[in-house]
Image (cartoon, rainbow, N blue to C red; front, side):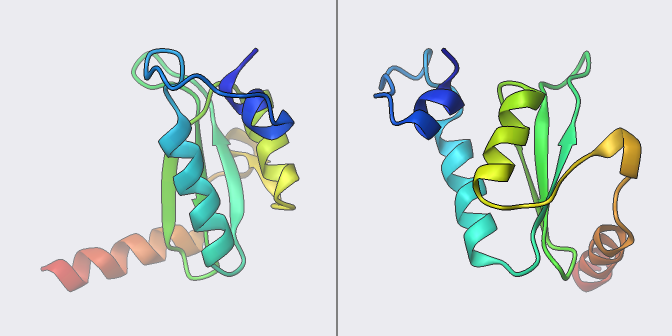
Length: 109
């Protein structure tokens, strides 16, 4: 059983980091989703370099990305928080995220 399913279903999760690699990631994602306005979830597929990830993007373009165990777990998690969930291959990244990144780059220059 995957870690996300255990967390959602209430099954105890092992404390060994090797068997619970994403607990901090899930906590961060939930904090972001609950503390920001207009959050949407975008699922990024596994590549040869990275695991499957979910990126949360707020109304102003602020975003965070964390790894998830599978696309199915990401869909289920997003829906459990009533977030709109999208496949990044079908929708692409929203313009507000690109605008936010540009603002951050200008601010740090």
